[in-house]
Length: 240
Image (cartoon, rainbow, N blue to C red; front, side, top):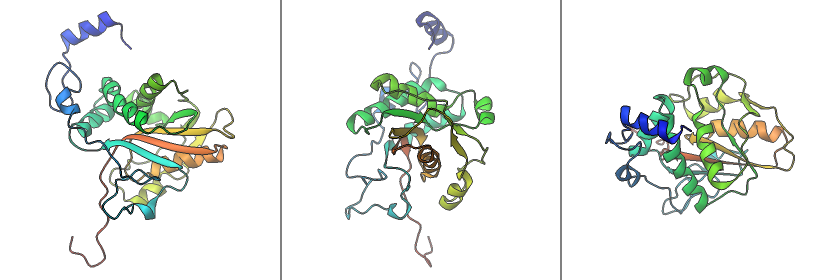
């Protein structure tokens, strides 16, 4: 974190602009924060997906088997979507603090019984290219607010994988299978909470959880800032 005087000088030279609307003065303004679409109950107790009137999870056939629970703070839409994109792809790491506070607020409403926090890692090459791991920055905000211990080093991405964004669910799972390994202190009997920015299908979190289970973790949870709304595939023969 920059010294307050240095931060003030930087703000004078390069005034912050809201990642959601472009308004000057802050990195994420109050008006855009007010538009955050929090994920509220009823939700699936396993994957955290919002439930409809029938109270049946639309993702029930695709629940990550290695996770004991998965939650996301808000829907991946509006200003939050813009802020996460800027944090991840535009080098605006300063957004980790306001975005991380959304994660903290959601955690305080529904915490997991974890005793160690681990961010989803980037491959070493991608980390060099980006300069930081956005999941690690978010995990730091959570741990600073809650006092939970943080381990950023032990879970590693050992295989570079193509971007997940254009892949279908099954392709995503295959893409990250075996891409992670754990090389740290023993995890026997420990409960771990994984942190990431976005959960789309849960494939990356599932692959990370598999590596942690193989290392002896007793329970593995996951928390993300956001997730897109789930839209089931149309039935065969549909013109949609």
